[in-house]
Amino acid sequence: MRCPFCAHDDSQVKDSRPAEDGSAIRRRRQCTSCGARFTTFERVQLREVTIVKSGERRETFDRSKLEHSVALACRKRGIEQERIDQLVSGIQRQVETAGESEVPSTRIGELVMEGLRQIDSVAYIRFASVYRDFSEARDFEEFASSIHDAGAQDAGGD
Image 1: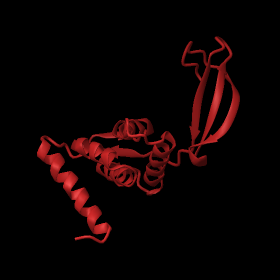
Image 2: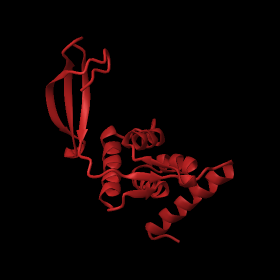
Image 3: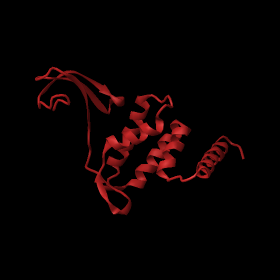
Protein backbone atom coordinates (compact mmCIF):
# COMPACT_ATOMS: atom_id res chain seq x y z
CA MET A 1 0.00 0.00 0.00
CA ARG A 2 1.45 3.35 -1.06
CA CYS A 3 2.09 5.85 1.75
CA PRO A 4 -0.14 8.95 1.37
CA PHE A 5 2.60 11.11 2.91
CA CYS A 6 5.82 10.16 1.08
CA ALA A 7 4.44 7.90 -1.73
CA HIS A 8 6.73 5.02 -0.71
CA ASP A 9 5.12 1.79 -1.93
CA ASP A 10 5.65 -0.36 1.16
CA SER A 11 3.91 -0.32 4.53
CA GLN A 12 3.36 -2.68 7.44
CA VAL A 13 -0.01 -3.57 8.91
CA LYS A 14 0.04 -2.74 12.62
CA ASP A 15 -3.58 -3.54 13.49
CA SER A 16 -6.63 -5.03 11.73
CA ARG A 17 -10.23 -5.12 12.89
CA PRO A 18 -13.70 -5.50 11.38
CA ALA A 19 -15.50 -2.31 10.42
CA GLU A 20 -18.85 -1.26 8.96
CA ASP A 21 -20.80 -4.10 10.50
CA GLY A 22 -18.30 -6.70 9.31
CA SER A 23 -18.48 -5.70 5.64
CA ALA A 24 -14.98 -4.17 5.69
CA ILE A 25 -11.65 -4.53 7.46
CA ARG A 26 -9.98 -1.46 8.94
CA ARG A 27 -6.19 -1.63 8.88
CA ARG A 28 -3.73 0.67 10.65
CA ARG A 29 -0.53 0.82 8.62
CA GLN A 30 2.91 2.30 9.09
CA CYS A 31 5.15 3.39 6.23
CA THR A 32 8.49 1.56 6.24
CA SER A 33 10.21 4.66 4.80
CA CYS A 34 8.93 7.74 6.69
CA GLY A 35 7.24 5.99 9.64
CA ALA A 36 3.90 7.79 9.15
CA ARG A 37 0.76 5.92 10.23
CA PHE A 38 -2.43 5.82 8.21
CA THR A 39 -5.68 3.86 7.99
CA THR A 40 -7.01 1.83 5.07
CA PHE A 41 -10.27 -0.05 4.55
CA GLU A 42 -10.59 -3.31 2.66
CA ARG A 43 -13.96 -4.34 1.18
CA VAL A 44 -15.17 -7.17 -0.99
CA GLN A 45 -15.96 -6.10 -4.53
CA LEU A 46 -18.31 -8.60 -6.11
CA ARG A 47 -18.20 -7.28 -9.66
CA GLU A 48 -17.32 -4.27 -11.76
CA VAL A 49 -20.43 -2.17 -12.19
CA THR A 50 -20.80 0.64 -14.71
CA ILE A 51 -23.12 3.52 -13.91
CA VAL A 52 -25.10 4.90 -16.85
CA LYS A 53 -25.48 8.63 -16.31
CA SER A 54 -27.63 11.16 -18.13
CA GLY A 55 -26.76 11.54 -21.78
CA GLU A 56 -25.70 7.86 -21.81
CA ARG A 57 -22.28 8.69 -20.28
CA ARG A 58 -20.78 5.73 -18.46
CA GLU A 59 -18.40 5.55 -15.53
CA THR A 60 -17.28 2.88 -13.10
CA PHE A 61 -19.21 2.72 -9.81
CA ASP A 62 -17.26 4.71 -7.23
CA ARG A 63 -18.15 4.08 -3.60
CA SER A 64 -16.37 7.25 -2.48
CA LYS A 65 -18.70 9.40 -4.64
CA LEU A 66 -21.69 7.73 -3.04
CA GLU A 67 -20.21 8.22 0.45
CA HIS A 68 -19.57 11.90 -0.30
CA SER A 69 -23.13 12.53 -1.53
CA VAL A 70 -24.71 10.84 1.48
CA ALA A 71 -22.32 12.60 3.88
CA LEU A 72 -23.24 15.99 2.40
CA ALA A 73 -26.94 15.30 2.86
CA CYS A 74 -26.34 14.19 6.46
CA ARG A 75 -23.93 16.97 7.41
CA LYS A 76 -24.68 18.55 10.82
CA ARG A 77 -27.63 16.22 11.39
CA GLY A 78 -26.12 14.21 14.24
CA ILE A 79 -26.24 10.97 12.27
CA GLU A 80 -23.55 8.53 13.35
CA GLN A 81 -20.88 7.75 10.75
CA GLU A 82 -21.54 4.05 11.29
CA ARG A 83 -25.16 4.52 10.18
CA ILE A 84 -24.02 6.33 7.03
CA ASP A 85 -21.48 3.58 6.32
CA GLN A 86 -24.21 0.95 6.72
CA LEU A 87 -26.45 2.80 4.24
CA VAL A 88 -23.65 3.14 1.68
CA SER A 89 -22.59 -0.50 2.12
CA GLY A 90 -26.20 -1.64 1.69
CA ILE A 91 -26.59 0.35 -1.52
CA GLN A 92 -23.27 -0.93 -2.85
CA ARG A 93 -24.30 -4.51 -2.05
CA GLN A 94 -27.66 -4.06 -3.83
CA VAL A 95 -25.93 -2.62 -6.90
CA GLU A 96 -23.29 -5.37 -7.05
CA THR A 97 -25.67 -8.25 -6.44
CA ALA A 98 -28.37 -7.05 -8.87
CA GLY A 99 -26.79 -9.14 -11.61
CA GLU A 100 -26.49 -6.19 -13.97
CA SER A 101 -23.16 -4.94 -15.29
CA GLU A 102 -24.73 -1.53 -16.01
CA VAL A 103 -26.98 0.34 -13.58
CA PRO A 104 -28.71 3.66 -14.32
CA SER A 105 -27.63 6.50 -12.02
CA THR A 106 -31.33 7.12 -11.36
CA ARG A 107 -31.52 3.72 -9.63
CA ILE A 108 -28.65 4.69 -7.32
CA GLY A 109 -30.40 8.00 -6.56
CA GLU A 110 -33.64 6.21 -5.70
CA LEU A 111 -31.80 3.78 -3.39
CA VAL A 112 -30.14 6.71 -1.59
CA MET A 113 -33.48 8.48 -1.23
CA GLU A 114 -35.13 5.33 0.17
CA GLY A 115 -32.34 4.94 2.70
CA LEU A 116 -32.22 8.59 3.76
CA ARG A 117 -36.00 8.72 4.09
CA GLN A 118 -35.74 6.06 6.81
CA ILE A 119 -32.83 7.77 8.58
CA ASP A 120 -33.56 11.51 8.60
CA SER A 121 -36.19 13.62 6.84
CA VAL A 122 -33.94 16.70 6.55
CA ALA A 123 -31.11 14.68 4.96
CA TYR A 124 -33.73 13.14 2.67
CA ILE A 125 -34.96 16.58 1.55
CA ARG A 126 -31.38 17.85 1.11
CA PHE A 127 -30.48 14.94 -1.15
CA ALA A 128 -33.77 15.20 -3.05
CA SER A 129 -33.20 18.92 -3.66
CA VAL A 130 -30.03 18.14 -5.61
CA TYR A 131 -31.17 14.83 -7.11
CA ARG A 132 -34.48 16.26 -8.36
CA ASP A 133 -32.93 19.64 -9.18
CA PHE A 134 -35.17 21.92 -7.12
CA SER A 135 -35.01 25.42 -8.59
CA GLU A 136 -37.13 27.50 -6.20
CA ALA A 137 -38.54 27.49 -2.68
CA ARG A 138 -41.91 26.19 -3.88
CA ASP A 139 -40.19 22.94 -4.96
CA PHE A 140 -39.03 22.42 -1.36
CA GLU A 141 -42.47 23.20 0.03
CA GLU A 142 -44.22 20.76 -2.29
CA PHE A 143 -41.72 17.99 -1.60
CA ALA A 144 -41.80 18.54 2.17
CA SER A 145 -45.61 18.51 2.19
CA SER A 146 -45.62 15.26 0.22
CA ILE A 147 -43.37 13.74 2.90
CA HIS A 148 -45.66 15.05 5.63
CA ASP A 149 -48.75 13.70 3.84
CA ALA A 150 -47.13 10.29 3.31
CA GLY A 151 -46.13 10.19 6.99
CA ALA A 152 -49.68 10.95 8.06
CA GLN A 153 -51.01 8.15 5.86
CA ASP A 154 -48.39 5.70 7.22
CA ALA A 155 -49.43 6.64 10.75
CA GLY A 156 -53.08 5.95 9.91
CA GLY A 157 -54.17 9.57 9.43
CA ASP A 158 -56.01 11.10 6.47
